[in-house]
Length: 68
Image (tube, rainbow, N blue to C red; front, side, top):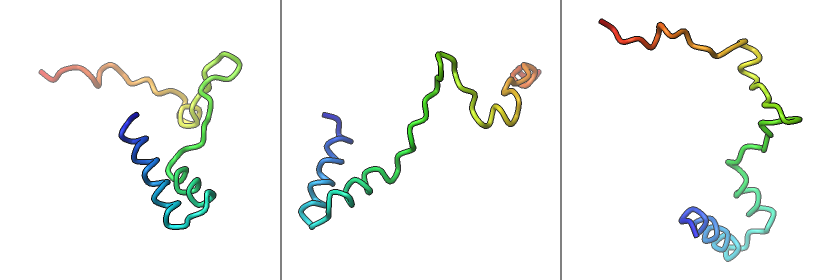
């Protein structure tokens, strides 16, 4: 078991011992998590909102050349 999993289980059991309800424990567990958003829809990769707004994220190759 990973250390992070052990820490989450320990924290949940500690909260239960202090009288927290299951709803409060779940709310604290999920507080930092981002909602799931699929990257592929219909077998094709979705464009990110920032890509759609900016057009393209292609960087000109001249920015990565070594200075003389």
